[in-house]
Structure formats: C-alpha cells, structure tokens
Image 1: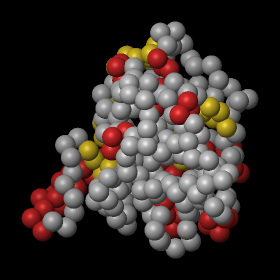
Image 2 (image 1 turned 90 degrees about the vertical axis):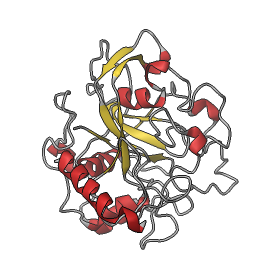
Image 3 (image 1 turned 180 degrees about the horizontal axis):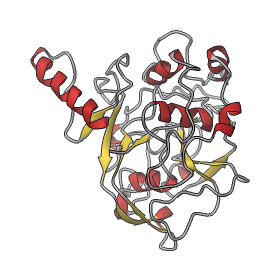
Image 4 (image 1 turned 90 degrees about the horizontal axis):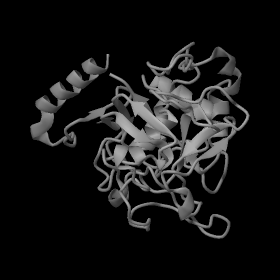
Length: 307
C-alpha cells in the first residue's frame, strides 16, 4: 500500500516538476496518503509538505541516555513535523465514519498494540463533539472552525485516544516511547537534544513562555530548523509535547521493539517538552505521564509508519 503511494507521488513529480507546482521532495522523504487537501506550507520557508516523513535506520541505543535501559529498534518512518491543524482537519471532515476498527494502528512487532474497541467510549460521539473538544482553551488552542492562519501550526487539545485514532486513519500508528527517544537522541549518538549537545535557545526550540502572563503563539511547524534532529525531524524539543504509545512508568527491560503496555496507573507517556515549560523539560531524557483523556494546549503528536 505505502509503496503504491510513493510510486504515485514519483509519477506526479515527474509529470509536473517542470511547472514548479509542488516543492521538491528530499531523498528518503515521503508524503503520506491522506494529504490531498493539505497545502505544502510547512518548514522554515513555508514551502514543504506538512505530511512529509523520513526513514529512521534502527539500531541499539540507551533509552534516556542510561545504560540500564538498552533498546533495539528496527527501521521505521516518523513524521517530519508534528501533525498540523490543516492535516487534522481532513480527519475531522470524515468523522465519525473514520473511527478505528479493532487492532488498527498496531505496531507490527508488538502484540496487543492496536486499537481496543473498549476505547470507543473515549472518542467524541460525532463531529460536533470532536470540534468542541478541540477548543479546550480559548487563548492557546490552535484549532479553528474554518481554515485560517493556524493551518500550519501543530494541532493541540487532542487526547491520546484521538491521536491514536488519527494515526490509525493515516495508515500509521503512534510511535513507541523508544522510537521517539531514538529519533530525538540521534540514535546511539545519545545526544541530550535533537540538534546535539548545545544548550537550547530560541533559535532551536520554542519553550519557556510564561503562558500565565504572556501571549505564547505556536508558530508553523518546522519554523526553527536549527533544532532539527539527525533525520531532519522538526520540533522534537519544545513546540508541543507529544503523545507516544506507551504508558508512563517503568521502561521494559530487555527491549526489542518494545513498549510499556502493562500499567495504566500513571497515564500515557508524553515526550519532548513544550512552549510553556522550561528548558529542563525539553531534554531528550525528560519523561512525563498524563491521563489519556487529557486534552491540553501543550500536547500534540506525530505518527510513525512501517513499510
């Protein structure tokens, strides 16, 4: 299925590249199948596909840069950008007919990692209720009823269940915590930040805004290219914290394409920090748990895909 989409994209590029109608696609960067209506306005110049993803070559590394938590990962694909308002709008337009079916969005190497029908009650019953949940905060929500200036901002106010449902609809899945950590820490380079070892500043990440006293605009995804990771992923630190598949808590040992799916007491994991929290929380070793029903202005997500 995914190879067919890539072939279709290649034929499209060949047929109209000379007209300059679409941006060049970088080597090893692919565009996802659910993006026919999404304008290519992301990245630092506002000209890239908001639906780009790139392949991450797997390997061994230490989770949270700690030798006590080694992990082995196979190759996988990860969205270059956090899911945007414009991209999420396509999911909203088809809701609720596009709710996930049993086992949708599963990790191919992890059993019982797909959609559980018992979670259906956690999803909005219809489109009106869905749009209402996306307006969780009048000041910092990015969703708008009609397309506007925030289409290339990351979608927020999304519960873990909605993030899972979107990724399943997008023929993908939520990344595991290990996969997210591997991408952010430059694999076995074990960096504390996606860009390397230098301390964070405003050229690399959006963080530390005092949302109680200050306006904190959440800009277009990919606006800070100096903060990109090894595989060109943007905003893995700052911007929005990101839901991952795992429960928060003890990390499984040993770990061979693993995820913590065993203990719901501490909520689901979010990684990467966000625009409203300090530098200490955008480091690649920082972990945090939130109940999956939460829809916060500082939490978003991106999806993983497999060949």
